[in-house]
Picture 1 (cartoon, rainbow, N blue to C red):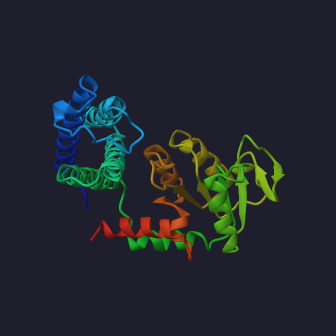
Picture 2 (picture 1 turned 60 degrees about the vertical axis):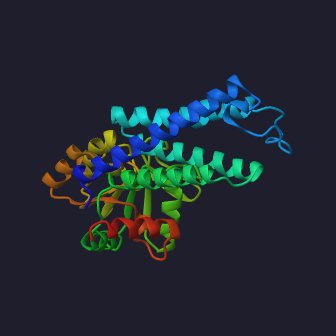
Length: 292
């Protein structure tokens, strides 16, 4: 299990990597802007021959603002400890990697490029580990409870979208392929049939109370939806969570448990349904592995 104690070394490593690569990118880009010939950096006069650039001015600007700027944004986010700091670091590492790949393609391989490529890959790997450490672990018992939930009867899908290309529709289609009865609940749709899916504005409006409710809503709406489920006589609620924050809130889960509802959280049905997409299967496998 990754705790705050384990996260701090990763944060320090990421900050060091972002600061180091940022300083070099800004310094190198700044020198190229001042001297577009590249002579100050010891570049041969024909370095850019065969490339779209006549001088190093534009590459210098890109290196300074895009590559260096991304690294300093990542470093600032880490210092301020904002929630999306790992993603900023991952993006900064990806930008640096892309820059180096293009540079190697245009200019050929140099040992310095390989050194910074190693740093960029280390940055992306560390950022991914830091981001993953924020996700709750999955235990085999959680998976078993989720699988049981899907066998208890009709499911009210709260937050199911009318848009065919939404992720909620992907989950809906996967449930239907397993012959699970699903009823859409969306206040903006109301009581209507959309693409053959029967919708209601609230769970309480469904004529026969479903066995469970799958909640794919913002966490600040979770308590309101739980109250609706309690009024409807639902016996179990599933707070959806994929790679983000998820639908659960501490108040909503506490209210559901106090009302005697069976609570499942921190899982996406796509991690449970078989056969599942390789990406969801990998996500499940990684989070299951985190507990070992």
